[in-house]
Length: 125
Image (cartoon, rainbow, N blue to C red; front, side, top):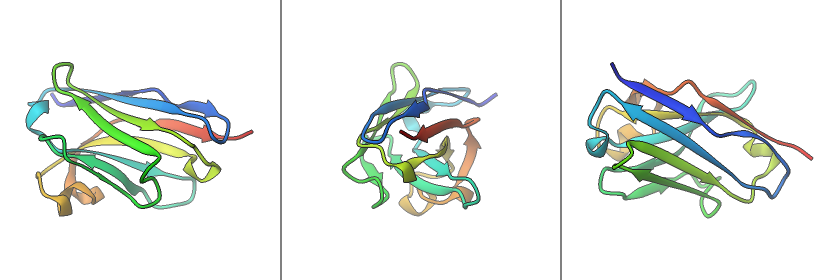
């Protein structure tokens, strides 16, 4: 059974930092492309970042330079480091496993075959 168990998140002030984690099991994590998405209240779920099995990374323009995606294949864990947080980063954040190791799949919600349960990130002073 595939499982993506998320942790991290919480309430932080503007300019602060957080680290999200996503512990994977039930598949060969080291061979999977993984992504992070987020969904703000009343908005569509949007792509944030992806990482290939090789470690190549991709970012949405809105988070480039502030967020860092990484993976630890020895621990089957995906990470998202969030720095310089802004109010508009407030959202539920989801990790997901991509069906395919293609960019076009990695950045689309319908390109994912498994999702984590989500973790709430709230930016507020």
